Image (cartoon, rainbow, N blue to C red; front, top):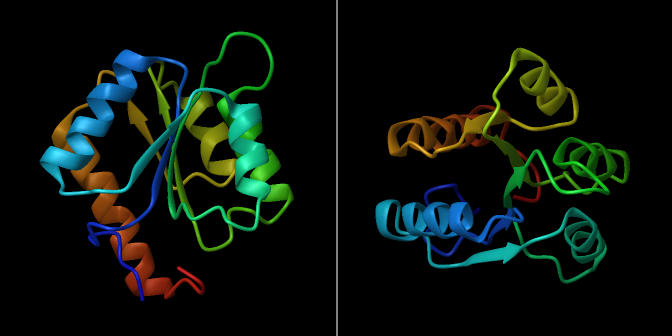
Length: 142
C-alpha cells in the first residue's frame, strides 16, 4: 500500500501561478523527498486528465482562484461528484484562507486548506494529517 511518505507518490498541483507552483514543488521535492510531482495550470485540464484511466495522482494540491472559468472549489466538487476523489487526498491552496473558503474546501472533499505563501511546517502538518487518515481509515485503492 502506498503511503503519503512514499517518495514515488504521484502528486498533482493544479495552480495557474508558476511562481507558487515552483515554491510548492521545491518544498515537496527538496523538503519532503517527493520525486513524482506534476503541474497543470488549469482546473478544466486537470478535470479532463483526472477522468482518464491513466491518471496516477494520489495527492492533489488545488488552488482556489483561477481567472475566469472554474474555481478550485468547483473542481473539487466535480471530482467528488464523479467519484474521482476516491483513493485520493486533496488539499485546497489559497492566498485567502477565510472560514468560508475552508468550509467550501472541506465540503467539496478537501482534507484541508494550505495558505499561500507556503509554510513548510503547515505543509508538514497537512501531510501528517493525510498519513493519519490513511492509517485510521485504511483508504481503499490508495
